[in-house]
Length: 327
Image (cartoon, rainbow, N blue to C red; front, side):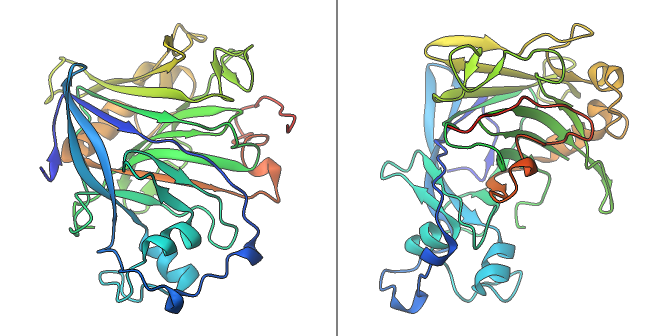
């Protein structure tokens, strides 16, 4: 098992479901748990591929952000050393994270008492290092089920520039709308919070993504998301040229829609055309971070008491989103 992934393809199967659990039902007593504590991460298996017919399993791990362990449950007192490692049951009950018996898919459950924990991919359950992913001239795919993720919630799948021991490209979505975006930083306190985003609905394609068979991507059913990080010269060492998005559902490949300006991906030209500066464009601001390697991060966050928080009012300071009628 390699600490650093640098294969041609990086495939992850992740099924994300949402169950609403009242805060008062979450009364887990850690002292009553008798099972062995994990070494910090849950076993999780992804696949690395040199082509679509040659894939190998890679054993990794999933670990919850220390901020959630410490702030919400006082399970971690030192940012660099947790003296209480969550058990499998605590991962499920406190943070809403459950890995399937096959260790190839996970369920994220919304827990009101500790909403939105960030989940990181590590090199394995018995290690203290994050799994570094190198995305230039590569693609990453994952399966997702967002059928129960409605207004007020955001299921996020993104990469963060950070060291293996402790700019990002981002997939943010629920069942109503989806956003492919980049958020970059020039320094610790100089980050682009708005980013450069591609959201089909406000860009003119109102029938691409949503709930029901009338949409190209029907979010009431599972689908696959593939993101490609294309370089200027088609080499792993080249600078980032564009970020492409492709969907697959029911055996059908669904390309990202083409919008005004003849764009269907994120590029310097797209960011400039739509007035999303992104600290000078994606090539200059993201290339070095991608060359350094990034860490896969996932989460389900939002506010169920405020439906306009995500989905119905998401980023409405610059984009108008589709209406949603709960079912």
